[in-house]
Image (cartoon, rainbow, N blue to C red; front, side, top):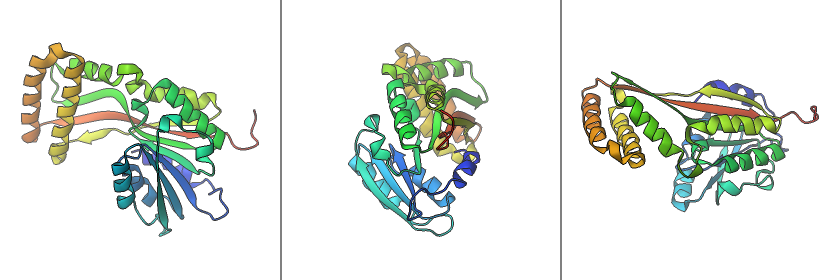
Length: 255
């Protein structure tokens, strides 16, 4: 994730009488965003974790950090529900809305609902690890481009935004008066992350074949060769992502 986007947040006042920073984590999953961000922010924090899966909510709450960067207390509550129906009222008192790997699995209408809710509540949004639609593999292979294109098409299935998510979100938040700052946040996978690289490769190629079944034969040979190179420490992968920070128009600013 892009640490460079945290500076503007650290300068924002808490906005609550008790001084706590209230953070809504949308689609929290196992809570990776909280584990990354809470210890990088100073001050007492209250995290509200949103997800549809009660098992993930329990895990996220159990593994959440308990201390901020300055030792301030971090507390957690969970809310089960559909973030596609998020409202301004649900974000009352929010200091920040955040999410990780979420934008690219939303539709345009869902992104606009999110932007509406944040604008209505007057809170920033930090949305991280959205796929950018680009992957660099070293050494290169002639099938890299076809696999990438098929994977990107899979990401866009059924109206999901996939690699278009960041541009759609930038437009949606800007139209509602926010200052929007994108920043690259690539995954760089080398020999030290061989197990993770192998897991990523299987999912990446599998999605491409699901989208384009005619690739199955060549893709199976491609995956076998790539996994062998990975096991030998000879493969490096950069999976490009983009983080986005949307800062609302200051209260009392121009209409």
